[in-house]
Image 1: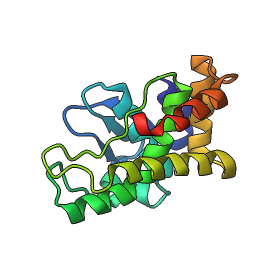
Image 2 (image 1 turned 45 degrees about the vertical axis):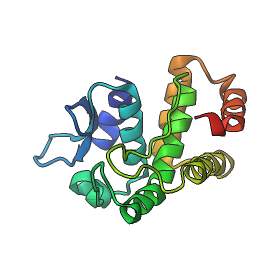
Image 3 (image 1 turned 135 degrees about the vertical axis):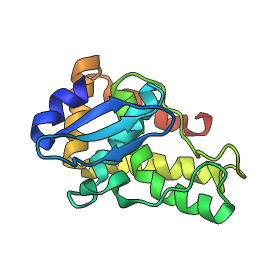
Length: 174
């Protein structure tokens, strides 16, 4: 509801519940909105897919799944290393969105059927450091707007920064 209210008119995009796999589908017909599809009705999946959408530029938003490569669960170490590199920014935004929504964030290496993370501790630190960088240097415009909407809706505006500091100090416990 929050995403749709904020971005349906301004960006012709809606968030919709999907099945097992999240994805992004650009508008294919005049007047039809683009769709950010989240998996299984999971709140975390919605926040994560919104984070990807907030990062994607105008040209990427014309492509299914923003034109990105995706290798499913069961990745090799080399594939996982690439996955971890491209997931830092969206997971940093997802974490900030989670704090704003007063929702517990769980970092995801998304490779349960493979060898797991290449560098789990390093990945967590890179995600944390990227979130810090966003807070210091500014979030992408759509991400900032959505973060503010979440803080207002969930009443976390006054405690957002203290909650973030508490969570960032406990990075090793995610």
